[in-house]
Picture 1 (cartoon, helix red, strand yellow):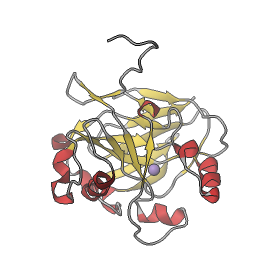
Picture 2 (cartoon, rainbow, N blue to C red):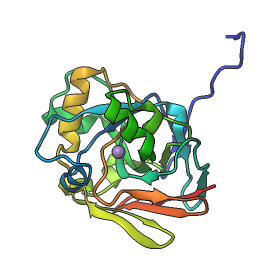
Picture 3 (cartoon, rainbow, N blue to C red):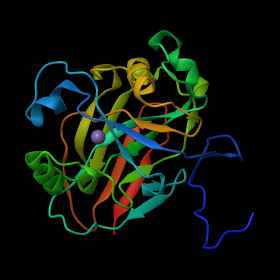
Picture 4 (cartoon, rainbow, N blue to C red):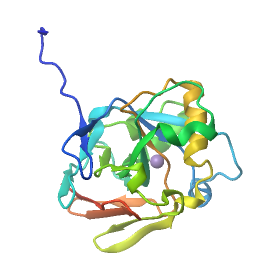
Length: 231
Ligand code: MN
């Protein structure tokens, strides 16, 4: 195959214990999926889950034991971290039931849903799409994927992020409003999931701003830590 302009390379994530990598197709994100974070954003109650996208090339792929770099983005004065468990889809489908959902997961990784909070807030107020606040370059740092069978009891894992060695967010995956299987049921009723899809499952409370020079270390029990510096 030849192209009239250079073709976009496939974005891929390393897999722990394997030389082959996980190729990324889409990045789905779940909004407001932990009770205390929904509250800090001004919402209460269990609403149906909702979703937004980031482009695959928003991923900042950080190998195990390394520190990645994301550039402080343009236009914002309020660049927020959201630590999230990421589910990587191995087999796709439409209208997947929650009872069958877990077998569609290839593995899990630690991710950050980086957000230009001031721009997101302006768009919300105007009733406009969130892309400028959420779907910009380098907005989706991710660590290595651990195959599901080796990830332990991920539904009860602790999830945290530290900035410059100090706790910012610390919670448990058990506090998800919509658990992983339920997310997949809802998501696959709206879009056909396919191998290579990543799902950022939502963030707990404690979202806050970072500045140039900060180092973020995110973790989920059972998965390699994600280290990334704001350049
Ligand atoms: Mn998020």
